[in-house]
Image 1 (cartoon, rainbow, N blue to C red):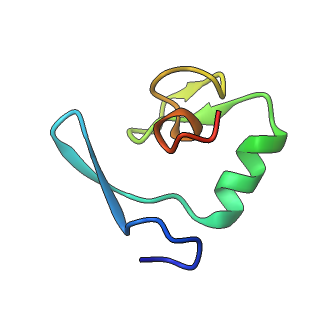
Image 2 (cartoon, rainbow, N blue to C red):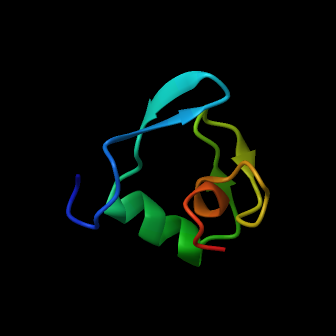
Amino acid sequence: MNTIGLPETITWRGDDYAMPTEAEIEFWTLDSVCETPDGDIVEPDHPDSWLSLLGLV
């Protein structure tokens, strides 16, 4: 577990991805775009965005 209580990795669409850092999560909450685990840029409320997958939006 990292410092904010999240696992180190997430399995998404059959592949494992490293969990984003706290700084990345904070940046995405303030920005108008967010990444998906495979690096695509989407809106923060997109179902595949990190913020959606982590249940933050």
